[in-house]
Image (tube, rainbow, N blue to C red):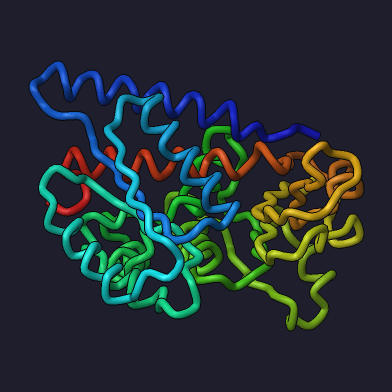
Length: 291
């Protein structure tokens, strides 16, 4: 079993991005600028945004953080998005999800200019990705495909099963895995799939993105499969100082002994999600998506 080290690959990609930024600046250009809008004080969101700012600093990006309390009105937030859309110094921005219940996440996503939608959530970017046009691909699916590529894992003609059905991860990932650059045969399964264990056991590449801690057990994985764990759920633990532990969607102890490659949680897909956001911002700064 080989552990897929997302931290290592992300560090390599950050170095590549850093070199690109140096070239841009040496040629008289400006540093790419990424902004994040954070509403409220959700612990996970606070941590994730802090990482994004740190990542920007590491690769030479300019970063901005716009904060709102969780009682901000939808109208006020949408007005700020319009302001960011029209900020010529800004190459891309993200509105950190989840948002308070009184704000429509879909309205917010659709309000972002697709040219600055470096999260890749806007329907225009999703649609462009589906038909093979240049687009900002949502960070987690892009990161997963990049991990497979950089570990030289054979995907051509392989049976890929993705467990889950989210619009942010599973839908775009299923398209990417089936496109000619990857050439996998894709099955999207979920909690209502009949004979789910058998479907998963047929997978050469099994991707768990269902959001249920340790959902995928050893009896759901065939020997030699590649297993990608997208899940990150905070669960209470007496074994850590914080009293919490991150768990993935895969029961690692059972599955690891059966598979050929597996991603850990944390340290697998997570770092790739973060670095993919940087890459999208760099692409925006270079004008390589919307020309």
